[in-house]
Length: 583
Image 1: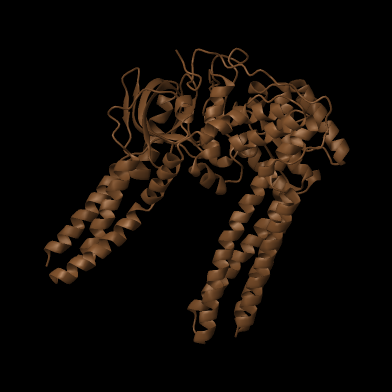
Image 2: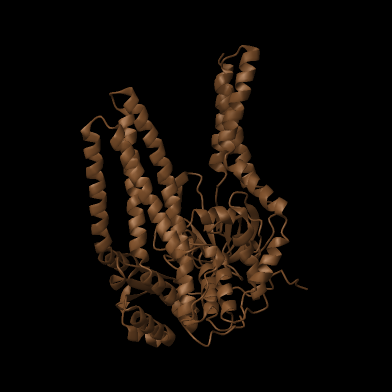
């Protein structure tokens, strides 16, 4: 008997739709975790402007020569001009790239209306109410449901979706995705993000200029001052980069809210996000066979590009919304989720669904994903295990550096006591080798007893780690390459009974071996039924580091993720001991 928290692959997933608001355009109180859009934009741009001003003044005041200032001025001027040119030409440049890379075709609103009547009505209404020109509408012939917007100003915007959006999403869900992208247009997100990016680029130019000054000839005081400005500029550059990411995430929350207000249907956007981010499709309402066009993803806008390799993670899941909620636990409670989001342009899906659920409640609607239950389940998680595992991961991440310093300290102690100065070299080398080997053994544990499992079971583990691999066996069909459109790509996508998973291949001959494998063998493997074993890892993009793949026809493919770790780790230890023997 299946417990409430375990996936039951035989039970069809049918979301009981919670309905929509009786009125559209109702103003909603912003979800507390989303921040304030105007405040976020103002503070982010204001702080970046202040950073630039401080750094320019710092360089100006310490300069003893006009040349560096002139060089900085020219560089800043070129940066501003180039960014302005790119800003206004970007829609046309992107049009060319869209045509070349994705075969995007431009369509009329009438064609959109034939595919999704509600979407057509939403576009007409928003453009009329906000007094903006209808964006240029494009469709990519790809079965992964996705959507994105680009342009410079609202009246030059392009809104592109994939065919999969219409294939796998219902009419109301498609409309909310379009409304989300229209929110980016209405909020002038292109202009704000371009301005922020330009300022961050100027900060980096100031860092380069000050660093150059600190290494040149002349007054030592001037060089020391320049070194200080260089350090400050680099710190500000890092801060500016994270401010941009924060601003990007905030704007995603507000595009979600715009969609909820515009359509009165936050639940439909929740469903759309879940289907796009995790690939969840309702059994019985869609085709039973996956499209063979699914050879990658084009998650360029509605979902974080960092997760592009795994869009469709739970591609055709047969479970209940409660079980899907288990997938959100990692997003909302695992410390790695917080860290991954900090480095991401988009909020994690679980947090966006939670925000949309609060909007549904404000509109007096029941919610389809019981986020209160997810939060309650999250509070019952073992916090010591969550944060203890995260601490182990952090130490593991720095294992090589820790090994070097530990080996150096040990080498110094032994050298002083034994009088053998060679330990100053042997200690760090042995420590480095030990660190590499320990990291490899923990990251790639014994897989001889790897259990046969499913994608949804792996994704429902809130303690999963991007560093400590979890041995797993998955059976299914190879449906394409991991990197869409790259004919030499060596990574693969596996579809099993509950979902789709990205398989990362590693040749013992490094990148050259990966290239040759992708060029010669991958094409013949696509479409075959396979049994795989590997190490599952969870990040913004979940994946499996492949160990071995067997086809039903008897073909065996081996992957060697630990190979070079053992070679380098063992080599460092052997070299250290060899140097010790020379004395």
